[in-house]
Image 1 (cartoon, one colour):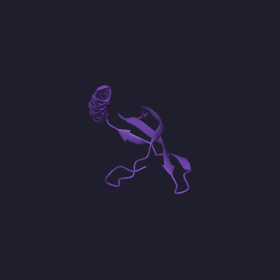
Image 2 (image 1 turned 30 degrees about the horizontal axis):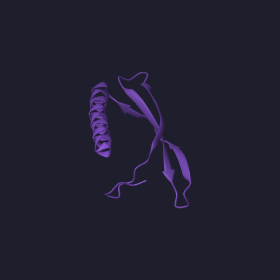
Image 3 (image 1 turned 180 degrees about the vertical axis):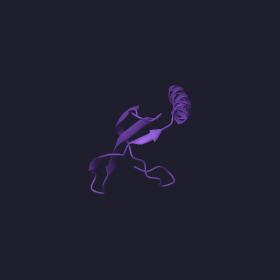
Image 4 (image 1 turned 90 degrees about the vertical axis):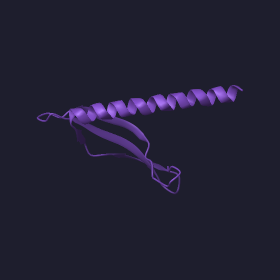
Length: 83
C-alpha cells in the first residue's frame, strides 16, 4: 500500500502494549502487513519500542486530534453525498 507521495504504508493488524518492567516507560509492539507484487500479504511483528510517559501522553493527544479530524471528514463526506 502507498500514499500519494509514494511513501509505503503498512496496515497495522494488532499491537501489544504495556509497562516496561524496570523502566519508567511503556513498551509497544506492532503487527503489520506487507504486500507482494503477486497480491499476497505477509504478517510481520516489529521489535518492542519504549516510550517515556511524556511521549505516551503526546502520542495519545496527537492520535485523538487526528481521529477527530478523520471523523469530521467522514461526516462532511457523508453530508455531501446526501445532497
